[in-house]
Length: 376
Ligand SMILES: Cc1ncc(COP(=O)(O)O)c(C=O)c1O
Image (cartoon, rainbow, N blue to C red; front, side):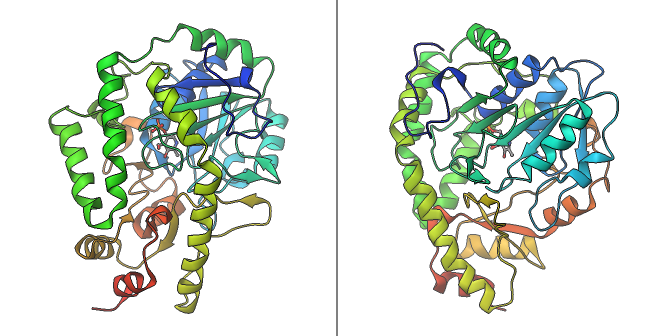
């Protein structure tokens, strides 16, 4: 990975020699876990409110994912929800930055230090945010980011790892160096998808394009999808999972990265507009504690009938997200394959039933929001 140039859009603290680039964020996570020595017999604590690929990375290494419940206000794990799950087998805590808000990382680090554990910041939602004035991704032993479609800086697919811990650094470097890159055809298809992606910013095309993308990816295998079928129904590593970042992907990252600050600021501004609207109607707005800067990747609120509002949004051409539909999004139903028992994380399960999210990059108008929330 050595020939890649520094990421000038990241704050200076992200030393180039501590950054590693991957085909997807989940590969960055897998690499970090492997470098931490996670394997058979180990336990890794992660939120029971996450993307299934996070649990998969743990399972691919033969370790056991242990699910911590979330705080209903922050949607994040807390030292309280994690502490009782720590056993002599625990090796790592994955501290996810949900929807763009960091968990209380200093408190989680203190807990980890008391038990000799590693902490990984899952910043898939958090690029451009901060915790106590320090950039998200620089607060624990290691972190990773995603530059997948839905993120403010997108290369279609992509992952970045940042390693703060000095002992871990050479171990991650050694693994990252051995990873093959995606082939030219794969890279070219993804580059083509990047070209049509801006069309999805048109609310009238949004749902049609999302459906077309899912059909082409999942049914026909003709486009490069975020999660391939096996990742959603098996806990065995799929073929071509372990890849470094491609050259075209990396070029795209350097180019679009320059827009990061402006993209996050724009989302935060639009979120403020939504705040006023929701407050007037007595609906709780996303929590922003003093200690963290929320990137507003998703503007999440709770509704009494999630299915009905999602249907209505589609009818009205208002982009509305369903994150997360289950403790291991997007897999629904029996999650025992991933070691999750129904009822294990009640606050998470309630959030899955109640939460929908606006996508602030779409800047839905207040008139549209009024229609969405009207009683008809
Ligand atoms: C919380 C969380 N962590 C990790 C990931 C994995 O990122 P990627 O899709 O780049 O592998 C995702 C997916 O976007 C996610 O939502």
